[in-house]
Length: 208
Ligand code: GRF
Image 1 (cartoon, rainbow, N blue to C red):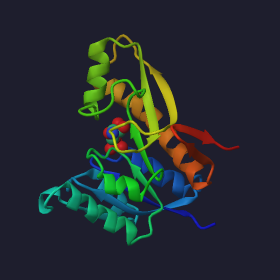
Image 2 (cartoon, rainbow, N blue to C red):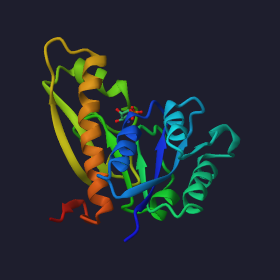
Image 3 (cartoon, protein in one colour):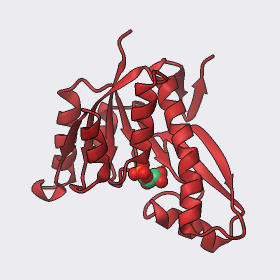
């Protein structure tokens, strides 16, 4: 079996992307990142890709007629490299239904909360941690899941909780949750690349 070809979509700094790069370089993940695509020109994740000899592609939404055409351009970049697994690592745009159907159960997203809490439309990045703190929650965490037509509603692969301490603020909480995100995302991609993950309806089973 040849290494799984992975396409990573990002919009920001790319620390989750870096975790995947490091785990592939160390041999933990039997995959290869064929391309990193961003809707943000200045996303530092594109620099991380270039620093590791990975194709880094910026696609400007403004140069597309609509979201459908924009998503078609991304699909084209993935298809021309035979990408088998798509990872959303801090990608802040909704995928088109055509994208979802072309990569059904082959798109993995990381979200910085314990889904179904603090997720869905408007819940992304630091906004999630602010909502968690404002609500007075005592624990939060991260969720890695397959992507379906709605925001953050696809079958859950892994979740892990994070205790909220008295003195936590948005920055400290974000960093605590990011540590857990990096663990969950790399483990999910590692097992996917070893063909150990199966989806039955909404349930995700990890084979021994
Ligand atoms: C992460 O918290 C991710 O869950 C969220 O955006 C953040 C991106 O972080 N969607 P990075 O760009 O991977 O550092």
